[in-house]
Length: 105
Image (cartoon, rainbow, N blue to C red; front, side, top):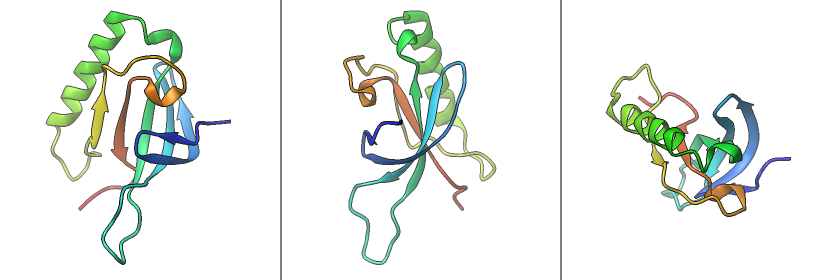
């Protein structure tokens, strides 16, 4: 089972997992202009056991900073990231970052 909501995203599916954490497909629940479809995003969360590791948070912060600096039509643009989020459950409070689920033009 996966979380129902992470930040402003309603979680639709689990896309995968790796050494750092899990990635979910989310639909943005914030209002969109009339006639527009909800924006989809890949939502990356961090494994609970890594949350208290300051070295890991430093690496994750660098990943977020690096992702923000990439500007290419061939790479997903970072929508948001939070390396400082606290651990208290539920999972949405863990460090996370959001990428668009499809290429943007």
